[in-house]
Length: 348
Ligand SMILES: NC(=O)c1ccc[n+]([C@@H]2O[C@H](COP(=O)([O-])OP(=O)(O)OC[C@H]3O[C@@H](n4cnc5c(N)ncnc54)[C@H](OP(=O)(O)O)[C@@H]3O)[C@@H](O)[C@H]2O)c1
Image (tube, rainbow, N blue to C red; front, side, top):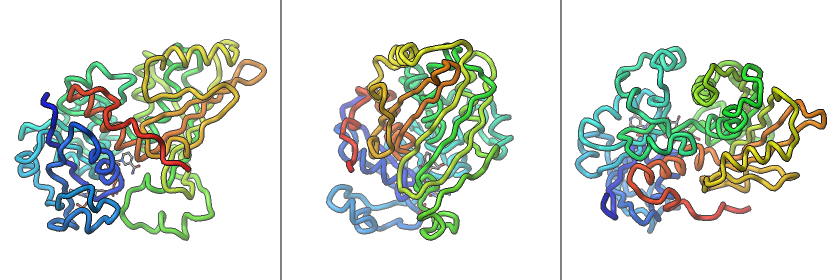
């Protein structure tokens, strides 16, 4: 792989697309070569988004896959599911490697995708697509042609539970994921449910037992456990722009101490650059990971030794989408996986 790779962002005017531009603009081995938006086609990125003036110099172009492939070797597709299903096969056919941020290539079983989304028109690609969670699939990511970048909630939940589930230290049918997300998780499109007065100064649960991230979490946790895992997942919307806090509840299969489980997590994530175990006695916040690829974790064990609570914090647009996608690109392109992702969090 040459030192400079031409890269396209399809859906560059959405929240995850803009976060990709923020990260890729300072990536030392990337040349932004094609940025698409139907609404803003023909207009300079810096004119539409003044925050990127003087940093991103291209114009938006229409999302024509063949034209995108003429300009770039790699594509990030940051478009809604279903649109990705139409676009990605054409980008691959034109010779590109793709990291898709939608749900369209995350599932191993087309039946699961079809039960939760819609008919899958390229099921053959699900066989080769690699689920883009580097801590679990690093080796396969290096040679992948197509990566299904994980959903934001599943990233926090799977990383938060993986050590316990793989070691089978918890009951696998009573796991609870109680998660809170900032409003950018719903994308940039206008909708009543995410408009200011509906969201500000309020806090609500939604899609109980119905959220489409549930089967994704169960897929990855079941692979780790080697048997089916069932999870009760309740998402909440909180009045902040970015961030996910996942509070995860599990029953231990045999009594454990906090020190023992910290040892388990520290072993599992020992060489991982983007998972930080908080010092025992402290808990992570969404603010401390804002704008980064970090997943910060902490845990507590009930004094009786029978229940464990794990808390995971990520940025939904960072580790939950764009930063993880850049990490996957680094692995695919053969660059150190931290390239372009070593900036500190946006504090406060
Ligand atoms: N937001 C998050 O926290 C998050 C986290 C993980 C994964 N994701 C996933 O990432 C993808 C993008 O999410 P987002 O939040 O960035 O959405 P968004 O803010 O709504 O942006 C969507 C982007 O896709 C373009 N687009 C929409 N329909 C299109 C179509 N039919 N063909 C081509 N381009 C189209 C839009 O621009 P034009 O309409 O101008 O073309 C825009 O640039 C989604 O699949 C989402 O599920 C989002």
